[in-house]
Structure formats: C-alpha cells, structure tokens
Image 1: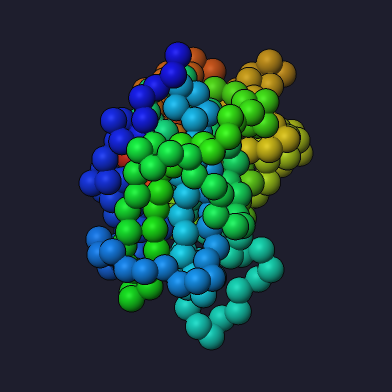
Image 2 (image 1 turned 60 degrees about the vertical axis):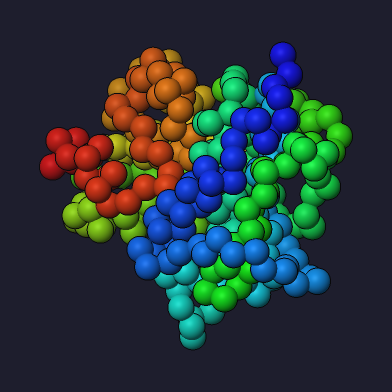
Length: 163
Length: 120
C-alpha cells in the first residue's frame, strides 16, 4: 500500500508543534523555535532519520554547522567555555532528528520503520508536493525541518530496526 | 539500587541520567550500555535492578534485548525510553514484558510518573 503525499498526511503546524516540544524538553524550558522564514546560510549540515513504510522519506533538520554546535551545547547543557568532545555534535544533532522523526512517524500510516540517525549533506528530496517544510529561527539562527518524500526508493533492508 | 541505561547515543544516555536526577532518583548507581547486545551482557555481569533502554539501536535493538533476556530466564524490570511512543509500540513493549514506555521528548515528570513505585 502506498500512502498519499506527506502534505495530505501532516501539516507544518503539527511538525512545528512536535519541534516545540522537542526543543523545550531537550534544550531547556526557555528555548523556543520562532516560526519565521529565514534564509539558510550557504554552508549547511543536516541530521535525518529515514521512514519506510506506506510513506517513504526522511525527517531532516538543517542549519549552519555553527548552529548545530550551539544546539549541541544546549542539549548537553555544556555552555561555553566547556569544550565539546569528538562526536558530540554528530550525536546530539542526530538525536534531535531522531526524536523529531520518531514523533512524526507515529502520526504516519503504519506499519513503518525508522532508520538510525545520520548526519551530513542534506539528502535529496522528492517531489515538492511530498514535502512538508517548517522554517524557524532559534536564538537568531535560521534552521529548517522538512518531512520529505524519498527521491529514490528506500531500501527497507537497510533499516536496522524491524517493528 | 542499580540502573542500567542503554542507548546508542552517548548524549541521550547523559540526558536520561540527568533526568533521573531531576526526577529525584539521584541516589542510585548507574551503569551505561551502548546497544542492546551490550545491555544484555551487562544485565548478566552488573545485575542491575532496572533497565532503561532505547528501542532503536544497532547490533541488537531494545525489544530484541528484552526478548533475549526473558528467553534466558531473566526477569529484570525493564522499561523503554524511546522516540516512538505509538500505541502499536506500547503494545509490543508490554507484550514482551516491559513495565513502561517513556516517549522522547520526556521531562522529569515523565520519569517520576513511570518510575515511582519501581524505584524506592
């Protein structure tokens, strides 16, 4: 069974609501995402988890590398001058995407599988009608959260966690 | 009491341990495991009184760890802390013998609600 495009399954307000909860719980009770469209910088980094099932795609968090580092400091409550350890940014940034993705997945038709978090260059998106995007600003830093259909077929055997 | 925290994310293990303290469970020993296989092994070697486990992990998932523990005869109290809190996941967790499932994102109240009565 194939699900309809993501825009028929979830809206930006719902994704924003999930992100608001994640931000308060993982970054701090005074941390908010302001839903303002702001242009992302030229250099960005993304964290994402794939979803495969009736709907195939990924939940992707994208921002500047420096913003990913700042997000990590808040997740770890390791504000300057404490140094981050190797792998902390990949781990914390990926975990933000993982929690966003898990909550989005729970609203999509099932059964579906969630992949493990990945961090790197923003993955290619499929059709614009199969993309739900939230642009927001956190502490002056622009970022985006997209729930985007897969550009190519997702391979279920690569998902490590059967439901 | 001793609590085993299993998550492939070192950052998430730190958050879970921090939240345990915020929820008032700050006088327990904590042991960490980085996947389900490691958790399974440490249940044998560390003999924890409670396992708090992620679901989605490489090597061995949380649910596979729980099933392996029960198949081996271990009845260690086991709860999930996972980003997926759908009714389907909760039912599967309960069927396998989990006491609770705390969905991420969580806060100290989520931990207190789930753990009061389990941790003295």
